[in-house]
Image 1 (cartoon, one colour):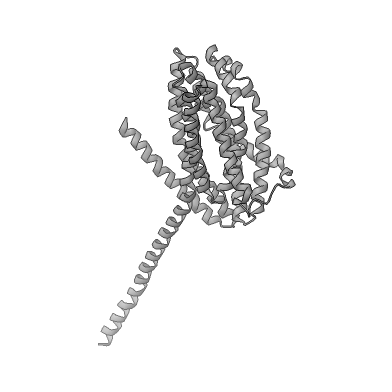
Image 2 (cartoon, helix red, strand yellow):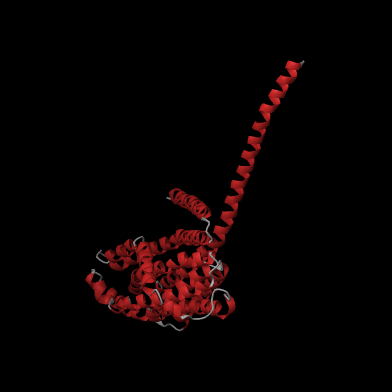
Length: 364
């Protein structure tokens, strides 16, 4: 009996650690699932509204181009070139430069240095405004630039006229993108999405009014872009400076004029990094001007590029969401959480783009 009791006790003692290991494994698995779910909710709180916001603001140019198609082939070709090449070039550069705020404002918000968010935004306004001034020759000399690259004279001349009329929207970018990043880093993404939706509806109405109601032609069509983008800036500026951000906006500060060179270098590197990923699309449209039936070729390629641009809003939104999440965690001193946030974002982005690619494969 003694031997049997000892044997039974030995069996029981050998089983206990195994049961504990199994329970520990289940608890660890449950903890990982909980962390993944929590991070996904935090990420999509940024990415979901960001996709809608970016798609809506980008659609302003797409809708303008669609209304231009009712004016004629020449008008559509000219507006397509201005939208996709001139505006698109500067849009990408200033958007990329403003992405420096994702790092700076994100870390400041995570570190609870809330007053610095307003300072960083003001610095970005100054740097992007000066950059916009330097880029003005692209709008003023659009016609000779396009002729140099082989565009037909009629398209180049009309594009040059249109480009001058969209200079106001060029400066709107310099104020809108910093405002967007400023609010995004505070997780005020629903404000951005709501504003973008309202402006998009207004833009559709204004386009219809200018093209069909007042019959203002190609100049009136492009003037709608100025109205919509500056309305977007006005709404966000009013919200940010008139009580919507009482902790992070404490008024204008002389500190915004300090360390501008360091801020400009960071913004420039961010801008060039993003632009290199999109400029080859712009080059394709310019080169299309050397083909036969230029108007049809430019119109067709521009429509394809516009659709592709809408799709690009998804990875750009994930890029923004990842930047904010990583910056927030780094600012709070959580390096491991920042790494985990990056991994979850990359995996989700790959899954979404795999589904999109599969849909293209099936449709083709």
